[in-house]
Structure formats: C-alpha cells, structure tokens
Amino acid sequence: MRAQTRSGLATVGVVGAGAWGTALANAAARADRRVLLYARDPAQAAALARDRVNQAKLPSARLDPAIDPTADLQALAPAQALLIAVPAQAVRGICESLAPIIAEGCPIIVCAKGLERGSESFMTEVVAQALPHALPAVLSGPSFAADVAAGLPTAVVIGASEPEVAAELAQGLSSLTLRLYHTTDARGVEIGGAGKNVLAIAAGMVEGRGLGDSAKAALVARGFAELRRFAAAHGARPETLMGLSGLGDLMLSTASAKSRNFAFGLALGRGEPPATATHGKLTEGAFTASVLCAMARRAGVDMPVSEAVAAILDARLSIDAAIDALMRRPVRPEE
Image (cartoon, rainbow, N blue to C red):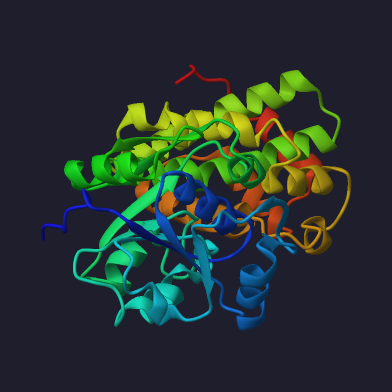
C-alpha cells in the first residue's frame, strides 16, 4: 500500500493533551502547520482554547496561535498525519476509535515509548492491527516535554517503513527548534524508546541506593548491551540503537531526575514501595519491564538487568538481592 504524499502537509493532528502532546503540538505549529490538539475531556479542551495554556500538565508553555484544541475526534478528519501522544497501553483503544475517521494511508505516528501488555506487541504492530488502512510510524529520541514546548534545541528520529514517507514527515515536522532525522527502521526506533525506560528505572535505583557513579555507569552499559541483543533478535539495525532513539535517549533518561522513569527508580532505591514511588506520574517503564522480558525469553535473549527490574517491580526480589545476583553472575567475555 502506497501512502498519500506528504508534500502538501498543512494540518497535523495531535491525539492526547498531556505534557508530551502539548509540547508536540507547539513544535508542529513552529513548523508552520495548523495543529488540531485532541483532549478527551471536553472541559480540558475548552480550558485550553480559552486560556491557551495547559495548567495541569505543562503550565510553563503557552499554546501557539496555530493550535486548535478540540474534544471531538471527528474534528481530526482533515489532518494529513496524526501524532498519537497517549500512554502505550491506551494506543490500541484510541486507534480503534480513529478507524472510521482517518483517510486511507494516513500516517499514524506513535509517540509513546512502550510495549503493549497482554498482546506483547510493538506499538507499530498495535497500529497495524487497529488501523489496517493507515501507515504506522514511530517518533522517539532524547526529549523532555518542557524543553520541546519551550523551543529549546532538540533532535529526535521518526521511523516509517516507506523511505519517502519517513523523509517527508521528518521534513514537514522539523523546525528551527526541533530537528527530525528519519529512518525506515521503525522497529529499532521503538525498541530503543521502550527499552531505555526500563534501564532508566534501574539507573535510578542504583542512584537512590547510593551505590556510586561507577556502578551506575556499569549497569547502564551492560543494560544497553542486552537491549542491543534484543533489538538484533527482532530485526532492528544496530546503527539505530546507537542513534537518538537508543543511546541518545538512554543518556538523557539515566542521568536526570526530570526523567519520570529515573525518578521512579530513584524513589524505589530510597525505599519507597512501587505503589507510591511514581508520585502520581505515568511511568511507562513500569508497564514495559515484564513485557520486554517475556519477549526476550521467547526470542532466546538473555537480559539480566531488565529481568532484575521486572522482578523488583513484581515484588519477587528486593533491590539488594537483585544487585547481589547480578554481581554473582559468572565471569564472561564482554559482548
């Protein structure tokens, strides 16, 4: 199936008016696009239209004048591409709701960094199943919503199976503040985004436990090695994992408490239980860890760091016991 051309991209839809959706809406507006920003709650959409600021999720940034908030999914029909900025576990539901609305071959760009629980599916697989007449794509990379919304220089990558479409979307959404690279390796892009969240939790736990920078660096390096093995087993290209959506995002997410996943791990390391360590914020890595490990086992990929995170979150292992188990693993060549 050939997608419609993006050369005339004028209207972009953003589904989800959280911090990330609001930031992406501002970024698309800076690329001289008309933006339709969908909020599920009519009261939120009305407040966004009236106040031009997302007080609950991103109060630091005003909405660009080119952004039209709406609570009507049907209003997204004119969009020539949709950015899906909802949690990974909500992607299927929103795509099923969009099925009667979007045009044949419309790019559906998932901006969530996770794997679907239950089905153990990648996000592009979820889109393909829920919207078989659309073109799945994925956007990921080192980016905090507040930075993107504020117009600070940021670079991310967009992956789509058709090279012309990936290039046109990257061109159409890039601006002087947000630079998009493009690739046909959508699988590598989504693996990097999902996997780094799990490793960010691990890094946060090491930090919270006070184990030192050397331990954190070692854990991140070995965790990244297992993520690359996972990617190779699922057909991703190694250079994708070494790029923005893999190594780049990992560097950001394992080094700053502004990362929700790192902050969650930090709280766990300091002794907070998983139920309260999120501090009321969405932590995608907490949903992804067990799915990532199940998929790895099915593919015959050894992922001890990720397995340790999943065991801790499932209360099968304490942090101290997990550290002890990792340090007692047999000595082996570095791969």
